[in-house]
Length: 438
Image (cartoon, rainbow, N blue to C red; front, side, top):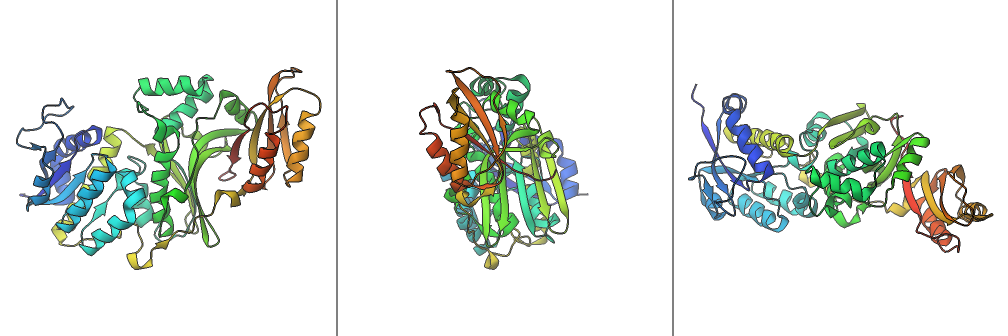
């Protein structure tokens, strides 16, 4: 059977782009049967044609002029996998205005400019697909848009950054420090040379912005998402977490709280019995609760050439089917029709209420713990457990306190006062505790 041909222009041929090329060529016959068309990448835009790459392409396919993809009337679909936010935004807008559909893996692009891009795509009646932007090979966005469409999403917790999950797993199991483990992650290719977006929580926050939009049908002002990284976590914190029955994970969290939405990324202590606690190494997972479906979790490889490319190809097939059917925008990109998407009212982190792990670095002298307890009590914070591993009078030691539920702004004020005590030698470490899926 002869299939109609759909020509694709791809911008970028790095890790993800190379994976996309491999899948389309290895599974050409299979994908033709599933899409109903032969999928052909006819142009690939690269900065340098001479650069060595993990895939070999015909010379006629490579081009360094991005305008050639936009001007080619036979190219109906553009795949953007170059990563640069400014250039990607310009490409997307030009593609939509030229009547071309877009598949992208760029989470920062969508987190920062999603509202503009979704509106422009709708205006021009073209598709924008971005499954690969969150969770790599985990089809969480399609699941939220379609599989869970009959549910109100009450809460969502995501392990969305494989670098951070690998580092925390290794620190916990091997008792290594953060700097030492980060170097190992870089050596293995799990962390970038400049890892700040990963370990600082920004990458996870970009992904959370997209998840919040789909889960709750809102546009998110990205700077309002609370973000805290894992740089301050020590092997001692992980040891204490284990002692109290917890694991520490960098979680991206969203919940509905009345007319406000929680959107936060930070190190979090969760029960060792929870499903998310079992997610180790570079893997990602998303745990959610719908009002009818109940609790569920999607788990898998969250990054890398093959899982991310798999998600991109899934989007390519979806767009190809729409092109054949001469339709577009059949499923809104955020799962909610544009006229009904509002702006998110993000709850400030100071309003959050829950239990805390607090680690004080103090000179071991009589009465220090009593001073800490007194100040916590002044701010309405009660203690549920205390741990001091060693007693070394006159020397600096860690004092760990677990609290009952308390409001964040009160905890922050109490810590500020405690940090001013003469026997407190370093800034106090605060880790929030989430109690769910026990």
